[in-house]
Amino acid sequence: MLKHGLTLLALSSLGLAACATDQYFTPKSEYPPDPWVKGYSNPDDCLGGEQLAARQFELPDYPRSAYNSGRQGWVIIRLDVDETGETVNVGIERAVPSKLFGGTAKKAVQNWSFEPPKDGPMQNCRVLLRFKLGGVSLGS
Image (cartoon, rainbow, N blue to C red; front, side):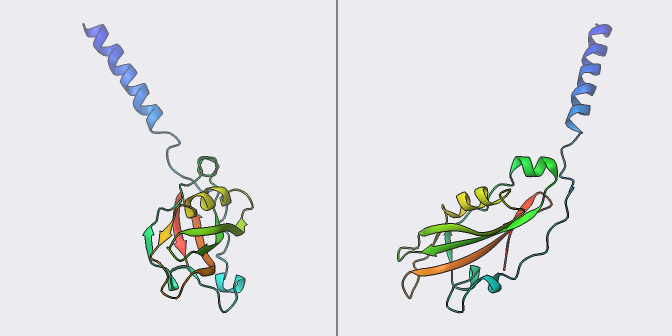
């Protein structure tokens, strides 16, 4: 019985040791400076939360490969909002680093919906998504 207990204790210790390693995001790349989003737009374009009220909104997941390698960056997403509040014509305006975060950001934004715009469809809206320290946040 004692031998069985010691074996169980040893296996438990190994299991706990395995759980304690490499579970936390450790940045290995510098976070690139945030862009000036208004610099990518025209005066008539909508920007992020200035004119949009979200109905359905989920931030993208941090890509596993970027998380595991400690990569950080941002994406400017361009989108239109139709008269019903659905996102259409979603595209990547710019992503740094290129191609690492854009796909997951675009996929998430395609599922967003907003309150129907009061003045009709909105075009060329831009939203900044930051992928930093293992988390995702909105920028302005």
